[in-house]
Image 1 (cartoon, rainbow, N blue to C red):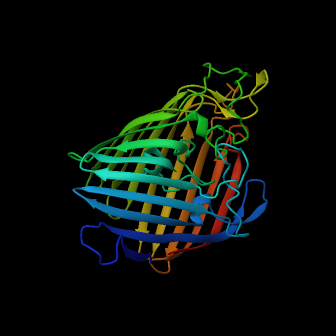
Image 2: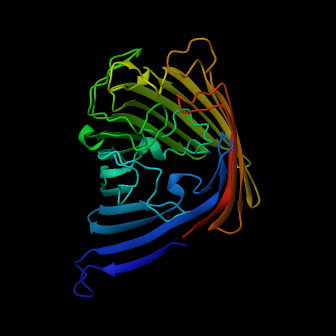
Image 3: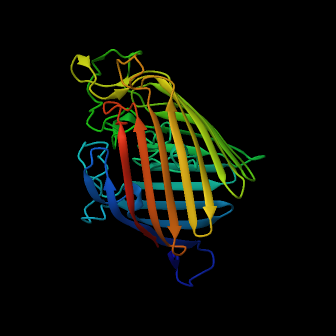
Length: 359
């Protein structure tokens, strides 16, 4: 249960001052995981499942509202700042005091938000396994959060809502984690001398334009995106809630090969241009929620491969049991075939089992 502190800007001095609401919320998630290598690990299922968020909302009147928020993430096994994330400016893991911090202004014209935060691409509720190690999402979440970011989200009209964001490349010298063909070790301030790429890269301010649609049980999103290497991608996804089950489908298109090397030669890590499709379902049964998903690429995802040996598929399954509204037991697992370690989707089975408490 969220604990909310109500504070008046001037305690009973005058009603002319706006009211502020400060909310402290978060979750702690702990369990045991088994990687495709058979090695066990302890702690979080994924980076965002253990953390604390502080949010302050002030109603300025006249339809204006300001929200300031900061999110700190940590490792539940050691209580250290989360080892999952790399500072986008220093390239060092655990360097960030907060994983996210932002301020937003809402009005009748929509919302403008600035800072480091999960953007409209990252928060879209289209993937039951989210961006975990078991995810069947066709794009993961590598472009779902940037530093030095500004985003506009329009009001909803007839179920439709448009969004756009842009981030400064100067605040994003490193990717915050490995995934979707990007490596956290890449120092993007250096020239990209990787060979074998389909298109020349140029360090760019990442940006995206997209549209959301919500109408009863239907949700859909389409966007186009330019990443930090100046390469383009797009995704179309939708979900439909039948009540007895919720269906998901999405297709991601990566237009160009992703790779980086500060010296001339092939990129050790990266991802070949491809399309990938996810189909998934969630079924609630009393206190249980069962999930099943599939991922499939239309061709090799490893750079330089053309023989179909890395035409990757993945099946994921899981179950959540709600002991209460705040406490859950979670089990997730996946099996990947024709995977590629270089493309960050290795072949094999992995799983995670643990508990989560939200407050």
